Image (cartoon, rainbow, N blue to C red):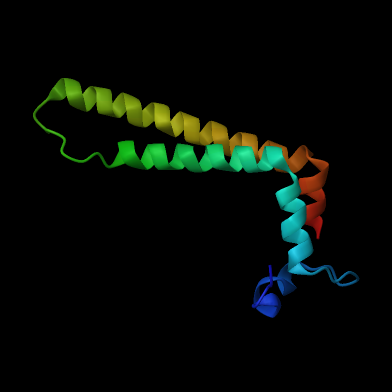
Length: 103
C-alpha cells in the first residue's frame, strides 16, 4: 500500500529521529486482531445509534412507539460509549497499538 500523500499525512506523526514509512505503521495496526474487532464493534454501535437516532416512518402520535424508540436510542448510545471505551483502553494497553501510536 503506497502513501501518496506521505508529506501531508505522515509528516506530523513521525519522530524527528526516526522516519518510518506509512506502510509499516499501517501494517503494525493491521497485525492487532483485537483492535480490528473492537473497531468493528465501535462502527456497528455508531451505525446502530444513527438508525435509532433518526428513525424513518415513525408515527409521532403513537406514544408507546416513541417511548420504545427512545429506549432503543438510549441503549444504542450506551453500546456506542462502551465500544468507544473498550477501543480507547485497548489502544492504551496493547503493546502493538501503543508502539504504533508512538511512531
